[in-house]
Length: 283
Image 1 (cartoon, helix red, strand yellow):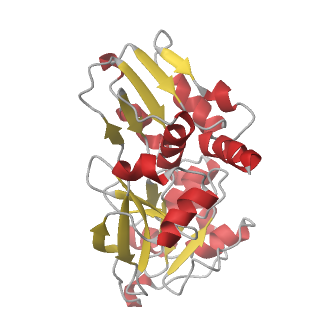
Image 2 (cartoon, helix red, strand yellow):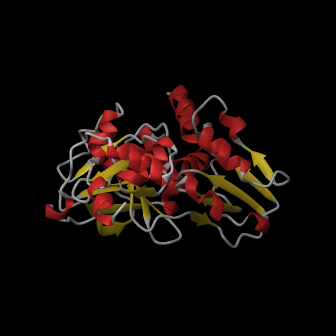
């Protein structure tokens, strides 16, 4: 296959392909330049799969991976590069003329400050059941703009590379670079706790009413599980989700060190879901 044919295949609309699979666009978050869907690779409550309509590329913030339509088909159907191309060749999807569409700005942070916005604080407390006072040191208030649209703000959780996970009532995303967040990296204890997302980490602090003194790693994406140096620790506690992705992550931990903490919230999707159930029960 020559390069021009490959370039032509990459022009098939990712948005149209995802919609053909039966997934619906998140109308509230989408605009003419970016479309958002719930991930086609896993179950989730908030749409975190973004398509840049100007470049016809996708990025799934939950797993920290993205690419063109060929890559998306490979990931979704577990196909080789060649097989994904063959599937596209017979496609009747509309074409995005990328070369003629204006490239737009990516997410741009305009301000980083201490969390003081009442709407964000209420989101943490009322929607997530989290004690803001205990978690103040781990989060920030991030103001940002996407593609020149109106300013937005969200709770920010910084990773080791300087990027942020971003959350508010309507938005779930992140800035680049994406990576893990390490809490207490120089702790004397040889114990490590691993959380998938920062809301679960904050939920544990709220539930136990104590900040951690041992090392904690928040993955921010299950794809970063293989970046952890397990040899440094004697006991590794796993606080991941009760799903297939969580099971895969737990299996990567050496058996002689692994301690599965998910039994505490066995009947819930994750720690935050468990916390919310106790939060509502107290009302």
